[in-house]
Amino acid sequence: MDPKEKQNILAHGQKHGITRTCEKFGISRTLYYRWLRRYERGGMEGLSSQRNVQPPKNRTPKELEDKLLKLIRTYPALGPREIKYLLEEINIHLSESAVYNIMKRLSLSRREQRMAFSRKKLRQSSPGTLPFQGSASGECWFFFITSCGHWKEERPLYIYSIIDYQSRIACSRLYEKLSMDCFEDLLTAAALPVAQNLNFQTRYLCFLEDANLQCKNKSLFEEKVHEILLTSGFDPELHFMESDALPKEIQSLRENYTKVCLSGLIPLLSKGEPLALLKITLQREIRTYNLSHKTRYGDLLLSPLEFHRSFAGEGTILPLWAYMDREY
Image (cartoon, rainbow, N blue to C red; front, side, top):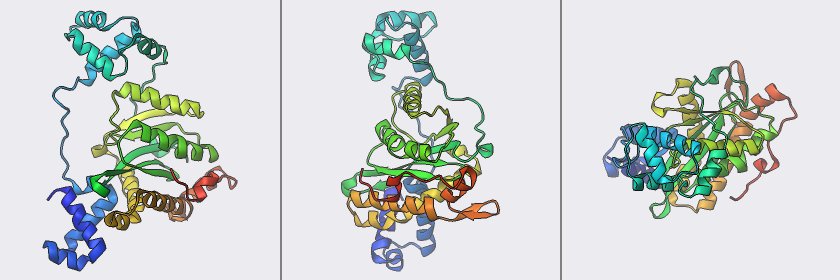
């Protein structure tokens, strides 16, 4: 049974009752609740069987793109033909049109685009181990995306989330597509203002690899993220982690928070409620979570904001808009 069928059964149970639903679809209540727990922890991904995703056969290998970008950065005035010749010198053979197509896909087909690209400071994600366990409150963020499945008229719906590892303070928003624009909106409209108000000294921002933002190139993506962060006074190391090999602490953090996000949305999704109502509902869930959701921090039972205050001081508060419903 595919994930969409399972989601339909879960939605039917929310509308018509679990006993009636299990009888209609010939499944046990145990199986229904197993699917529900998986959906609460991981969205649509939780209902899927794990499988390896192969890149398209006609996709340029990442290693080749990185070498081409290095040449463009070094020789920005050169066009596709000259870059083709330079690639041949390092034993990479592409046609002039193939080089041009890659440049175009990376928004580097015009000379002025390449010149601007070459002037940017080259930033690299850190190859080292992410020291998340030793981080202080506000220092280590994780970003991930949860698929909620299909909503009205088969439109997809995603929860974009950023959560701090130590304090567990989090920001989330609903979007209908996978894109860099949505991530930038979450970062600039929610996460960074919260971080500034709470005096976060953020040192690490980690992307879980299944957070597929459909970016054209990882190097360009990193530069864009650094540019956004620097504008707001932050300059963390960027890390990328394979989601199927996460430390158990991070996996547990993600699953517990995802359950919080989906708890109020599941009944509304099954009824096909308006997107505006879904967004407000998620806002309220996150507000309650940050301010009042008690969880264990060693021997202490605190909310995420209470924990951060114990670390940074009682005067720290969330931005004013975080205490009220706000459309976006």
